[in-house]
Length: 404
Ligand code: PLP
Image 1 (cartoon, rainbow, N blue to C red):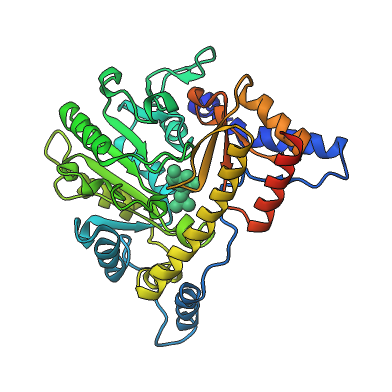
Image 2 (tube, rainbow, N blue to C red; image 1 turned 135 degrees about the vertical axis):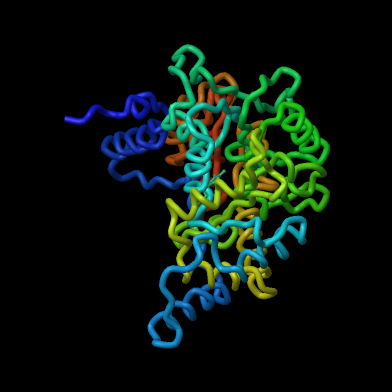
């Protein structure tokens, strides 16, 4: 038999969602009549809007005709879509040929790790989207897991908590090759100010690090003074890669469409352009995003589509307002939820899992224990606003009734 990849055995956080499912099932077994409502959901629930759906449907129909059929496309994506992303989402701060269209931000994160290889060191926000740490472990960048600290050796965990405004203390942060930074943040919902992002870019420049900036939630930023892209910061093009996604703002979680920006200025130590190697990775390991999805993406970026995107985002942000108001009414300390679909709630005197059990047991509401996103998530719950309004209203009603 073949030896198992030892890095796979090191993975830890894959335990979060199966553990939530296990506890949910156990609860249902004991309480067969209970109807659970979820505020844990990280997936979208609202239908794709009509104009964007038409973009998808028209392309699907074209593929059924002799004249309209197309097979493999460019691995980097349709030129028209690359240009439109650069124009509409980056206001021309980058060029279309620096945009690489893909099947999503998560697979791009994995392929970026392949690009970097096993011998780099990484830093992550703590708490953070688990894929950065897990992909690092799979590639063998991380050392053993320290149970006591709930951290992997060899990874720099940048504490992001209310006490530091969810922005890491960069003076205490060790230099690493790669810095993953998700903004607005999953799970805390925090959105960094321009000055903070300037510090981050400066830090990466000083340390000659590459900043991997995940802007999957950038469309949820409503305050014009907050940057939506890292390329709004001077000098970022020399240090930053931006990964992003159509998943949340237009409901493409199942359609699958995202992109990665690698500026021409970004180089490795030996002078090789990073996007030259990325092009090699994409042409070798990826065969281009679905032509149907890309036409949907193009529709999302015209005038009607942008309006629809705004409507979808507003729907979820309205949900967030409802959840936040209710939690505040109950006296909880509440963060996020304004520029992101996630609400980060402190649960004083309890561990994340104890609070999870309390919400489940008393209100029959499913949440996500913050500790599942990193050790600094202990003592918090993540609530999501990506559900149906009806479910959100019901969840809030139950919480108010049973947890006051
Ligand atoms: N990045 C972050 C921070 C996310 O929270 C998610 C999904 O939850 C993704 C990326 C995944 O995006 P995609 O659906 O484009 O793979």
